[in-house]
Amino acid sequence: MSRGTRQSTLPSSRTERRTQIADGALPRRQSDDEVTIWWSNLSETQANFGLQANLLSDEDLLRAGRMSNSNVRDRWITGRATLRSILSVYLGIPERAISIAYEALGKPQVKNRGTFRFNLSHSADLAALAVTWKKRFGINILRIRDDININDFAPWTFAENDLNAWRRLPEDEQRLSFLRSWVRKEAYLKGQGFGLSHSMRDLQVVESSTDCCMRIVNTRSGAPDRRWRIHDLTSPEPGFVAAVAVDGKVSRLISRRWPDGSICAT
Ligand SMILES: CC(C)(COP(=O)(O)OP(=O)(O)OC[C@H]1O[C@@H](n2cnc3c(N)ncnc32)[C@H](O)[C@@H]1OP(=O)(O)O)[C@@H](O)C(=O)NCCC(=O)NCCS
Image 1 (tube, helix red, strand yellow):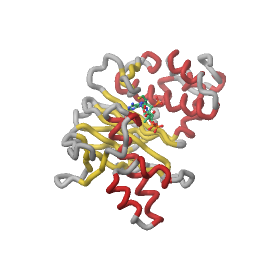
Image 2 (cartoon, protein in one colour):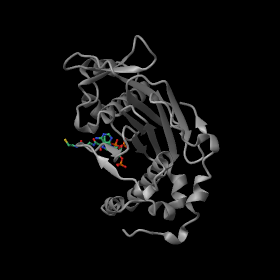
Image 3 (cartoon, rainbow, N blue to C red):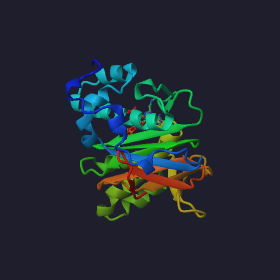
Image 4 (tube, rainbow, N blue to C red):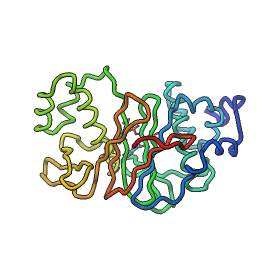
């Protein structure tokens, strides 16, 4: 794919695009224990597709070019451009010039930016891109869909006790319960950089006795993870479940819509 795909549809300059972000939403240097989540409806932002392809690095374009399904590819380009736009506003670097490095199992981070961190998740048309200035974290969102057979996935998602408890739930509660468990654990595994290379069955999500978030217990060792906290998130669009897992205590979770910066419920 060459840079400038659909360039004739280019709608605006960088400056024009940036002014869409409300003044109060422009990122300040948030405190080390805050997490900001930017929600973006990719089908809306895809209208600026021509501009977006121009924000991608050569490496991004190579990756996009390897995607054979054009819908998947276009959606990924939109998501990547959104990510680069958000990072650019935080870091003051032009979108294309932001250099992204990957940990061993694929967790991305910005090169040479100290402890600034980001993570993202997309499902259907919705993307959630979160940033912190220090804390390691992971985010996951999932559209609540009827077309996956949760009974097939449940045995390798739940720890044994949880699986038995889940099977006793009324059938109409099982799907939501399954998806919530999935996003919490995937957020945790993404936070640690494991992605899905680590078994979810070895993890149990438990309520914390001391605060409002949830914790993880490793069922093999029986050891609770005393550092990481799991927070459920409210998606600004109906029909999604979402969670963020953070290494340490969080003072504030801030949810904003991209690109206007309006605050939404966390
Ligand atoms: C990360 C992973 C869990 C994504 O699953 P998903 O539910 O389809 O996707 P999400 O939308 O929630 O997240 C995707 C984003 O997570 C980030 N990501 C990728 N790998 C990650 C990892 N190991 N840890 C944290 N975040 C990761 C990327 O930003 C990715 O976005 P991109 O595809 O646009 O680059 C999955 O790709 C995975 O398990 N990767 C690990 C690789 C692996 O298992 N390798 C096997 C070697 S043993």
